Amino acid sequence: MAKKAQSYTIGEEIIIPAIKEVIETVMKKDSEPVLKCIPLTAKTVQRRIDEMASDVEKTLMSELQHCKFSIQLDESAFGCSNILMAYVMYYCQSLILSQPVLHICNTGFLSALCSKLQGKLNQFFMIV
Image (cartoon, rainbow, N blue to C red):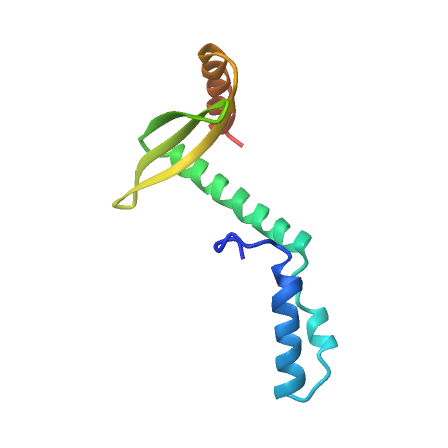
């Protein structure tokens, strides 16, 4: 669901009814016991996506603390606000990897943006 950028309610709206139809039509069984075991509510899907994102961030921080890396900053304007994206490139297990690290939107002056970037980078690279 997340990879396809679909609404998190798609599980409740499409997947659960499809599974129910298959169980009742093909297997000729009551679908309720099976459907109760499938956690596809929007809150459950959101929580799982958040857990995966947190794990990816922790893994990236761990890798960056033990290798050399470079940071690329990309500044652009989006509507009335400035956007600053930070990407990190690093070498890990014979692979050169690139990851977006953070995204900052700020409508203030460049000095405020730089100050916020400094704080975000310090926060990101703190040892947990």
